[in-house]
Every structure is written in C-alpha cells, then in structure tokens.
Length: 263
Image (cartoon, rainbow, N blue to C red; front, side, top):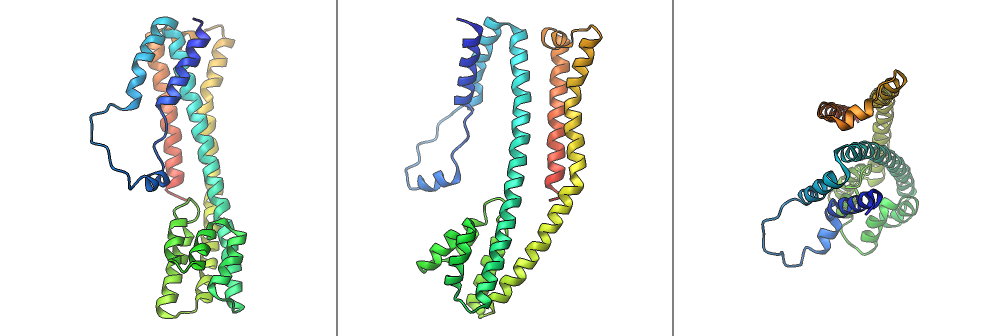
C-alpha cells in the first residue's frame, strides 16, 4: 500500500466525516417527520482520531505533520476566498435590489397596481419572485419579502415588507414609501462602499503578513538552513509550527471580524 493511496484514503474519510449539517430548507421539508429518540453521539471529528493514529504509524510523524500543516493552509485560503465571494455576492444583490426598487417606485408612481408593479420588478431581480408569486395568489406579500430578506445582501427587503404592511393597514402612499426606501438603501450602499474602500488597506496588510512565513522559509533555505525539516521533524519545530499557524489563523479571523463589525 503506497503512501499516495493512504493519503487519498485519509482525505476521502475526512471529507465524508466533516460534512455540513442540513440547511434550513431541508429542516423545513423534514419538520413533519418524527424525531428519532435522542442518543449519545460523539462528534464526527472524533472519528478522525483512529485514522490520524494510523497515518502516524504508517507514514511517520514528519509526513503527517506536513499534511496537517498543508491542510490548515489550504483551509485558510479557501475560507478567505469564500468570504470574498460572499461579500461580493452580497454587494451585487444589494445593488440589484436598489435598481428593482427604482423600477417598482416608477411603476407605482405611473398608477400601476402593486401586484402588476411587482411583476416587472420580479423580472429584473430574482429576490422579488417569491413576493410576486404570493401577491399573484393572494398570499402574504410582506411575509414573502421577509423570507427573501434572509439572504445576505437582501436585508432591505425587510423594510419593504414593513412599508407594504403599513400601506395596507393605513392606506399610505406606497409609491412614496418605496421611493424613499430606495433612496435610503442607496445612501447605505454608498456608506458600505466607502467603508470597504477604507478597510481594503488593512485587509491587504493582514494577507501580506500571513504570507511572510513563506518568505522566511525561503530565506532560511537561502542561508543554508533547513527550516521545513526543523518544523516537521522535531518536537520544538512542531510547537513553533503550531504556534505560527494558530497566530496566522487568529490574525486573519480578527481582521475579518473587525471588517464585519464595520460594514
């Protein structure tokens, strides 16, 4: 049994064991099913312990430490990439909702009924399709808007749902409320962009600092040392490697939290 085969087996077992939990939609679909009786279960990650011990015995500690370090680095890269894509998708959705609200306000000002105005809005923004379907069937449009507002970047739909409800209960001009809401969301989006631009330097600095250990390792080899062998084959190196990866992860997480608290 080759080392490559054992490595692939360990990766496959890790992926199968550390799977994401069921999403909210799946919980909704299975809410009517009878709940199984509670039982004592260990977390799935604990099942990796026997495979980790087997890898240490068969492949050696140096190979195992190297594989774990590479897994941590790959996880950090993937998490940072996923966060960037998530923020970009949220910004794009906010912009689409603002444009859709402009269309909705224009149609309402022209005298179209709210249900017909929602049809054109739903054609330009998919986040309004659930609300349009509810309006067409005579359902709860504000409730449908609040459900759509749960998506990242669609929080403005919650205010539209409140405006719709106020218009139905008090008879207020829904066109004026929608127009003011679009202006408010546009101002908030401008603040979002200014804040993101001001935090771009801090994020870039954090990523550069996270990459500095790579240059340090290259510098060590240029001086005739063997830093990777020290980090992966000696107990003191394992301690240094663990501390370095932990501090890098903590720094990136801290930077992300600071940016998240100042959207």
